[in-house]
Image 1 (cartoon, rainbow, N blue to C red):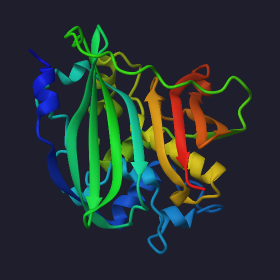
Image 2 (cartoon, one colour; image 1 turned 180 degrees about the horizontal axis):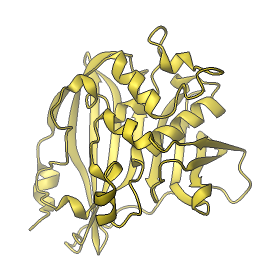
Image 3 (cartoon, rainbow, N blue to C red; image 1 turned 30 degrees about the vertical axis):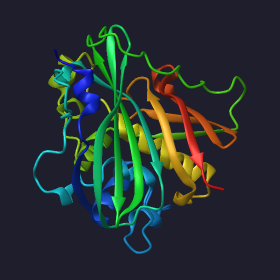
Length: 289
């Protein structure tokens, strides 16, 4: 049985130590487009180690970049779950940052399968990771993984989907162009999946060409929110929850539409070059006032 719900949910959490330096943070920011127009806007808060501020979504790659060495980045290895990686899709991502992430540091990340939902034709695996530093919470991530063909085991289908964006014009629309080489740079954060660099591999997966990482789109949207709605104050973005709808091809534009609502923002990201196809949906940002 590829998925054993009892074993998956009853398994003891696993822990690992992660380390990062200011170089990892700088690379992450550059891979999201920070400093692209260095002559007119070097964005030194993102691109210079002096007074470096850390975009909260750096939590998604902490411990996986250059400072992690040349070994492979942590992959999906979960107790009670033995599924072909080709059947898995990154369905959604949620991040809660409990305090500002330092430019360099060490944290202990504890992982567990928090939920396992039966969607009929698929299973939805919910993996939770909690990071602590010096014994205090630093961030919590929740990753939703869609396992095609693994449903039907008689489990709970899970809660209803969150509300979509409000049915009114957006309060703010922010356009972020990506570059043709953006996936080549972003992959150096630790996600070396050939889907993002190898045209032949991308074709075998059904794409015309390599696609941008979903978590790159996630980080680009987070930066757009911070810069466009929060006066560049990274400490005000306390969380970001999204559903991944479809990928962006490097070179396309990510258009982020925002609606202010208590206690934060509703948002949706689309790609104008792909007929305004949704990229991130059912998304909310938690804002510190």
